[in-house]
Length: 244
Image 1 (cartoon, rainbow, N blue to C red):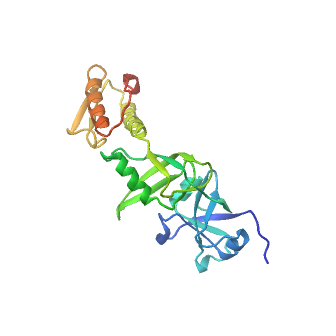
Image 2: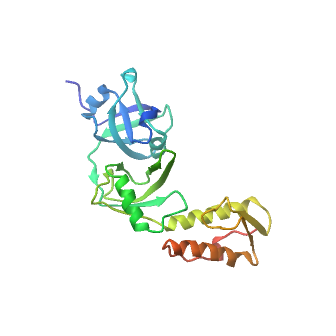
Image 3: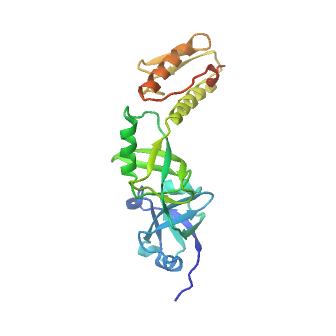
């Protein structure tokens, strides 16, 4: 019997197309035996950061090459790139009691609570770690992604029907401000025209003139109207914007 180990280090390679977006971690049978891992087990992967996925056997041509195949999202979650070494270990995942997500997009549905239920159903069975980026598919061509900003208990958890999942709306406000701030930083002027393409969810007209003197009230009106429609309560200050 081969000696069991707590972890092994394997070299990162790109996931095959069929595995992308499925949280699949492909390792060879020899590595699985050393770690006492079975197909379908939750396993922890550690690079610069910690993440997790589901163990699957490697493709026959990958046997005994000392590699692990993960997709770009798992590479991002572990802070690794192709040819980096990744630590792989078996882990006892806990059921997530609660998880809080920050959306990586601006528009949220009007009925946020119903959307949270939908997201939890789509993420059911997914192993996650704090600071992971996780995505769900809305169609064959569109994914929406979130960052895990709070997770209880600590460590690797699996999302189950009893998990309390919430989406942090305030992060949308921060994203809006970051976009506006970046636009101001690009132009050394006291007035800027924001084209509708930058914030189509907010601006109904083709463009909006924002100036230090009279633009702020107009911008504030647009933002607050949008945020209030989505049940988001924020305190908005002129100091949140940068004017040249």
